[in-house]
Length: 129
Image (cartoon, rainbow, N blue to C red; front, top):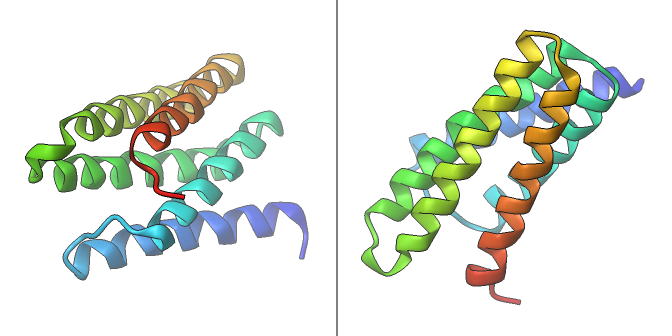
């Protein structure tokens, strides 16, 4: 399988995970987070390769997924920081998407770097080893 086909397939799987999570009463679990991680890595790779179509699909998937993650944590008062992390990450995915659509891959790369940091910051607070 060529790298572009693999990236598109991974983006589709990430979107499918997000959609299936919605249909199943959205739950943030290890499988969802691994899917998000894979999509974020694909986004980073696709931005570096300047593959606008695949990168835009990845970014759209992350915008939608983090909107759902934010809503999920918004229902739990003990996870207020997670709401902020999810919101920030969603905004960074949207910034990346806007930059990709403008063919500004430097700005997209900067947004992806921020997105990755936001994920790590949340995991430092909430991820159980």
